Structures are given as structure tokens and as C-alpha cells.
Length: 270
Image (tube, rainbow, N blue to C red):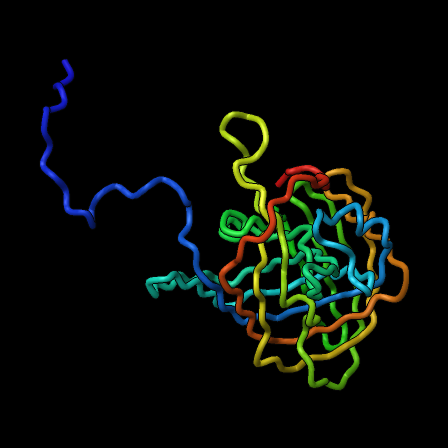
């Protein structure tokens, strides 16, 4: 027979008490050395308007950006100074150029992370639209790069070849509008309808100590896929590439407007 719970239990020291269940991760900042490729090309205004939730609007330049990077020695630092380290991994994604409150910004459409669990933290904390991928490819051979995404369902979603100029330039591998990244943080209601949180989140990115940065021309080919229909980001001009090493720092996010109306994009498969 099960013993009854005693009427009184000895009090446990606060430091050893069971923690609250949520959140899954303590908020913090990230600092990581990256080998980073950005491919930008002009796209269609109607597509951008369909993707962007209010109050975000398309920017003056109608641009889509593919980024692919190897993250090396990522450090996540919490408010108490505790540092969590991650092994090297690759990830990439698509952001589109937009404007918010008059600021040139990037809106995160999707991010693919190779392997398990590396992308969970960003998804849980900020709401970044991360999916696990079978492969995020970034292979360098002298002046040629091969980049691409293979989804968790085995679809070769992106195939890209970049031809780089031999000379390095005084630049960084990501455009300036990446410094103000925006995403939606959505937490579904436990009652099964609507969201407890539906907010725009503003996330500061910064690139520093860039080196070996080269530019070039890129070929981009999107597969037609219902789960990840990035092919709707049509290419309306030449695709250009910037590639090099840098240090990426991502700071604390900031909640902005409540978002009541937004469109879904693809399917949540990973």
C-alpha cells in the first residue's frame, strides 16, 4: 500500500527547490565566429507584401537574401554570466528586406539548421522560424562555392553556385539591413484557439572583425516544394554574393507591436 504524504515536509533550501517549468531556456546573448555567405537578389513587391505582417512594409530596395554559414565556437551567455558552448554546426536561411518604424530591417522568413537541437534555442526564445535540415551545404573550392539546403523530408530545396573574385574587399559578409532582424513570436493558447503571445520581436545583430571577404556572382535555383515554397521569391535580376569570415553577435530581443493578422508560409515539417 502506498504510504500517505506526510502533513508537513521539511523545507528545502531555495537554491535546490524545483525550478519553474517554463521557459525552456534562459534568455541570453550569442557570440560566434562564422564563415558566412550572403546571396542577394531583387524580388517581387507583391510577394513581399504577402509575406510581411503589418506593420512591416517592403523596403525601398525589393531584396531577398539567402544566407548560409558555419557557426564555430558559439557561446550563449546568460544574465548571470554563465556561458553555454556549442560544437560547430551549419545553418542558413532566407530574410527579406523591409522597413519598420522607418528603420531599414530584415524579416526572417525561414532558417534551416543542420542536425538536431542546435536551432531550438533561437526558436523558443525569439520565435525565429527554424527548421531542422538534413544538410546545410557550404563547400569552398578556391574561388567557387557550392551552397544549398536539403530539408528534413529529403528535398534538395536550394542549389546555388557562387564564383568569387580573387581580391578581398574591405567589407563584411552580410548587408547592413541584417543588423535589425524582425520575427514573429507566437505561443498558441492552451485553450486551442488563438495565441497567448503574438508579438513582433526585434533582434539586434552585429558583424565585426570581418576578414577575407570577397564578392562574386551567384546562380540560384529553388525547387518547387509545398512544405517550403521559397520558389515564390522570384528572382527579378542578377544575384550577387558576399563571402568571408566574421564575428556575429546577437543581443537580447525586444518585444514590439502585437500582430493580429499574418499569413502562414509552407508547412511546419522538420
